[in-house]
Length: 206
Image (tube, rainbow, N blue to C red):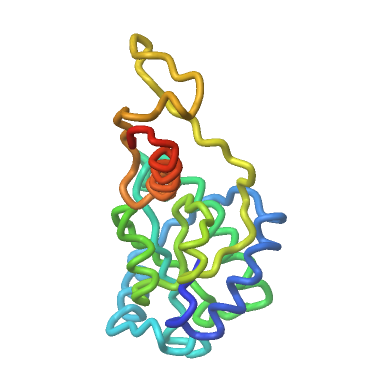
């Protein structure tokens, strides 16, 4: 997923390849950088401008906004990057570097962890080229960013309660109750829509 108005057209073309990537790419192993490679990376990122054309060999970093957790992106006990979104986007990196032999000409990823609710504002502000954070496609989000084809379609949202709590048999049973969800997530948007329906029916909001 990437912002519509602020990134180079090259990124838009590359992001379009993500659909094919998701069909083709398994989880990839992590390669660790040497001290020399880390120094070279620091030099390439110095004074980095996200709007510089990616054809510039000094500006081939793709900034990936993500969330640090055991699902999306994390560092294991051996210092290796891991995570579902990490594996997918690393596969994307391999895909766009196909046929590029010279190491200095290859695109490379820089993962930028942040709070979930900050992902979309940061993307819209041009602080990253793409986001990989298990984001749901919604109408509001599609007005500001472009999405790849969904790789987890038809996902159900399930209310989880304490085993000693009151039973929930239907959506109507949620009226007047408190539900805790991740700030900035699509759950918030869906609950707001549900509250509008409850209000129209004369029920208490969630």
